[in-house]
Structures are given as structure tokens and as C-alpha cells.
Length: 175
Image 1: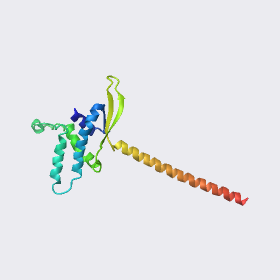
Image 2: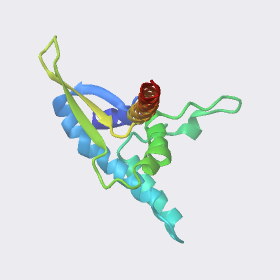
Image 3: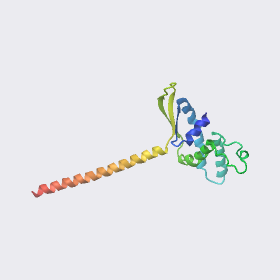
Image 4: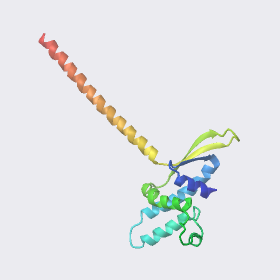
């Protein structure tokens, strides 16, 4: 169950899933260990880094389903091979994208948000999501643009009010 939840969380487009609170609390350390392995692989440098990165990738693959078992034996000449499973895709995404994104972050890659109780059985629901996801960064950039725009507007308004005040003073002194 944890493998399926972890695969769903890593592969989800929004980088978040809705599940029950106890499942989310169990899933957090499971996913964070896998992300830590990918983070270590992303920060490797040196001669033996390729072998160490492969070892870390194989350790992380143990957190997900192995893939298409006997994939080569199942294909015959002229047939297309079956697509890779979600577990293999999760490992690729984990090491290609998430390892680089969390390279400088020492921990705390997930967040759990409580949602309330489910109507059918009263189970407490929660959202578990990866931090610094695309939606968050876009919201942060939009807020930054809004604040920059508002400060520019305020500065422009201040200049116009200053210019208007100067004109009044000049016209008042001429009279």
C-alpha cells in the first residue's frame, strides 16, 4: 500500500494526493527516505560517483514496484514491448527532477494538510504534498510581481501628487 501511495505521490502532476490521515503520516517518512537517496545522488561528484549513484538509484527502486517483470521474455519479434510501470517512472522522476530540486534542502520534503472527515465513514482525510511544487512557485512569483507592480504604482502616484502640489504652490505664489 505504501509503495502504491508513494508512486502516486511522485508521479502525480500536482505533486499531491488525498488520503486518510493515518496513511499520510505513515507515507511521509517512506517518501522522504526515497527523496533523500535521490538528493544524495544529485550531489555526488568524483570518480566513483557513477557507481554510487547507481547504487542509490537501486536502493530507491526498492521503495517502488520493480517494473515489468520478465519484460524481455514477454515480447516476441514484431511486437511492441509493454510500457514501463508507474514505479519505474517514479524512480526516473525522483532522480531526474526531485533530486535536483531538493539538492540544497536538508529535509522536510512533504507537507500534510488536514481536510476534515469523509462523509461516508467519518475517516479523517488529509492532503500530502511535496513542498516547493510548481503551483507554489507560480503563486510566489505572482505575488512578487503584484508587490513590484503595486510599489511602482505607488511611486508613480507619489510623483504625480508631488508634481500637483508643486504646481499649486507655484500658481499660489504667482497670484
